[in-house]
Amino acid sequence: MEIVCNIDKLKESLGYTERVVTRHLTLPILNNVLIKSDKNGIRISSTNLEIGVNSWFPCKVVQAGEITVPAKIFHSIISSLVSDKASLEVKGDNTLNIVSEGYKASLKGESAKDFPIIPKLNNDLVVSLNSNIFCKALAQLVSFVSNSETRPEITGVLLYKNAGEKFLTAVATDSFRLGEKKIELKEEYIDVTFSVIVPSKTITEVVRVFSDKTEDLNVIFEKNQIGFELNKTEIVSRLIEGNYPDYKRLIPSEFNTVVKLDKDRFSKLIKLVGLFSSKVNDIKLSFVKEEGPRLVIYAGDSDLGENDSEFKIDMSGEALEVKFNWRYLIDGVSNITGNTAVFNFIDEQKPCLVKSLEDTSFLYIVMPIRA
Image 1 (tube, rainbow, N blue to C red):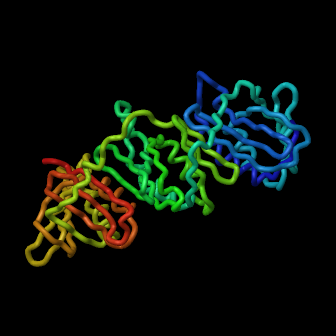
Image 2 (cartoon, helix red, strand yellow):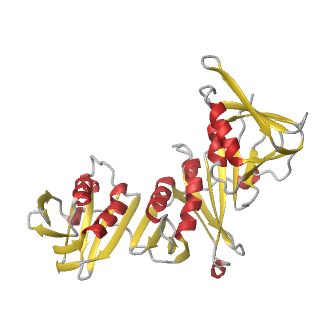
Image 3 (cartoon, rainbow, N blue to C red):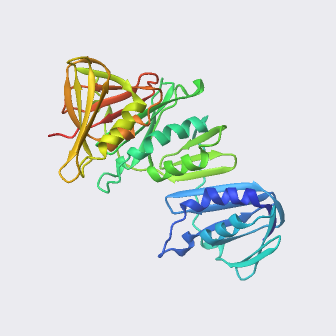
């Protein structure tokens, strides 16, 4: 193999692929990236056997070929080069010669024949949607997934679409809080149906690679796999098997207390008062009606002391006193858009529904700390 390529393009492709490479002692080839050229360009590939990433770009190909090299050091070398172009040439002993202006290196690699095959998807079902909007939606949810080894079905993000609906629904939960986001789709997908659970690591990579793109991202659905493709870069991932919990039954529809408040002010005060919370991050919210509706936020710890803060709110229904993990509250409130957060309560024991007054496409459910 011998090629001459643009260093910025090579850096970009390595940035997409190198991140999924993890240190693997029993299968050392997984520590490498695959470099493969054809008559038109070069493809950089990596995999950890759960996620595979391919990124292709055009370059000058003197001789086609392939090799695998250690991902971390190759990425470090290319990231440090300051010239515009680099020459990559493979010698017969699986050595990659890297030559750029004022720099040359010989990097020991391994044969490409031992590199795991990244599955090619059949494009049975492809849904195209704006990459930036889709990734922003996933970013709102991915931190809510569980890391439970006993419940693998909630360690990923549920993506589903029912026939007749004009939107894709994404859901994530760890059983203590839950987020749901609806993403509008094109009219042509009105009769499409699917339901898959995508590993959280895959979601994280999709957000990292595609969030700054404004073009349409192709989401490719197959029985046991899912793919995400845009501009000659693709992520292929296995799906999580199992049935996602029937989360709809957790979403209350009738409430005894409804509170509207300034989202930013609430977040700042929660963080401030939360400094005095105990090891379980508990704070007490008292929704008071006397002398005008207001919220009193309190936290205390026997070793630290105590503090409280209060501010006026818009409130209807019954007064209420409830405890929450304040970090869970921040996670939900910080992910809603608009200026006003709406808290919906049944009582101090039931889940609380949080949403934006201005944007109904996202909702968040958080469990209180029961006394």
